[in-house]
Image (cartoon, rainbow, N blue to C red; front, side, top):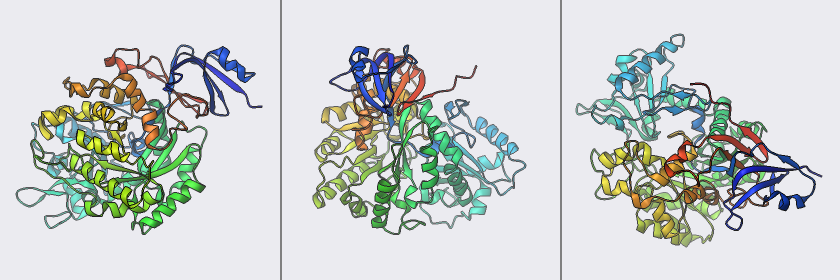
Length: 559
C-alpha cells in the first residue's frame, strides 16, 4: 500500500468553500486525500507526519495562466528593464533608468562579446521608451553611438516592439523603401530603427533567430521552471507556444516530465504557425493538438488550447482602441489578425472542443473577440467553452456583461497597474479609462470568471505581486488607480488559483486543496489573507509542492 504523508502547517487556506481552512493535509500517490485536523485524516490509516511546514502557510499551488517560456530567456541576454528585474537564478538585474545607463550597459555587453564574430547580433531585453517621456524616442543612431560595428536588437518589455541600430538595418535590408507595416520612419522618410509588431521585427532575421534558438534551448526551459518555483507557481502556461509544429515536443516532454522539473506546464500553441514549416491549415493544427492531447499529454505537460494575438500593446500605441483613441501620441494600432476572418479562422478549433485564448489589449480588440465568440456559438453551440479574453486591459462594463452571457472568461494583466499605470494615466489612456484598467471588481459584479496574470517575461512572474496589484491598485509613482476596482485579498487569491485553473478546464485537478486533486501547494511564510494589503507582495515564498514533491527555493544570497 502506498505511503500516506500528512503535512502539518501553521495555516492551510484551501479555497474550498465547504472546508475553507485546515491544520493538516494528507497526501498519497501525489494526490490529496483530505484536508482537516490530524485526527480526521488519521482515519486513512498508517501515515508519516511531516513537520516541514509547521511554521508556514499552505495555499493551493499558484496557477499562472498567462506566461511565456521566454521568461526562461531572461538571464541568457542582458536585461535593460526600467525596474530591478528578478532572474530565474534568484539574482537581480539592476534597473536602467536613463539613456546614459542604457548606453553604458550596451558598451559593457559589446565588450563582453568582443571575441564573438562581428555579424553576431547583440540582443538586450526589457527596454521601454515610455518611461523616458522627456526624451526623444530611442533611435538607431542612439544605439550606433555606443555600438557602431555590431548589429544591435533591443527587445522592448512589451515584446511587441524593438529598436535596432543602423548596422542591423543594413544587414537586414531595412531601408526607406521597406513597405512592411510597423517599420517606423521619420519625417525624412528614413527608418528610425523602431520596429513595431512581429512582421516588422522579423525583418531583423539574425536577432529573431538567435532569440528563437535561446527560447527553445534546454537552459531556457529549465529556467522557466525555476522562475515558476521562485514565484510559488505550480502550474504555468506557455501562452504562445510552437509545440504544434512538433519539433520541440520531445525536448519539452523530456524536461517537464523530469522529476526534478518543479512545475506543471500547459502549452497553448499559436495557429499563426500555419504555413511556416508546420501544419498547412487550421484543420491540420486541430488534428495535431488532438494527437498531442491523446498521445503526449501527461500529469505535468498539457496541451489545452490555442492562443491568438489580434492587436498590439497599449504602451506601444499599437493596441486597437475605440473612440476617442489615445490620450496623447500617435495611434499606431495594428490588427495582427484580420477581424473579418477571425471567426472563420477559429471555428475549426471551437468545433473540436479546443479552448481558445485571444490577446486583446485594446477595447476595440475585445469587441472583435466577443463578437467572434457569439458567431462561434451560433454556428456550433458549446455550453462550456471558457474561451478567454487575455489582457482585457480596459474593457467596459458592457463588454463584461456580454462576456458573462456568452460564458467567456477574462484574464487581466494586473501588473500593468504598477508598471505602466502612471504612463496610461498621463500618456496613453487618460485618467478615466486608466482608472478602470484591469476591472476585476466589475468582472466579479457582472459574473465573469477571471484570473490575473504577469505575462512573464513582460513582467516578473511573481504571483504575490500580481495579487498586490489587484488588491491595492498602486502605481510605481504611488497613485491609486481606480479605488472602486479594488478586490479583496481572498478574491485575488481565488484569481491566481481556482480562477486561473477554471479557464484552462483544469479546476477539477488543481486550484484548491481538496480530496482527489493533485497535491500542489505554494508554501508561504505568511498568509496573504492576514497581512495588511500593502504587505502582500512582501511575503516570502519558501517554495512549492508539486504532486507531493517538495521544491524549496534556494537560500537568498547575502546582499
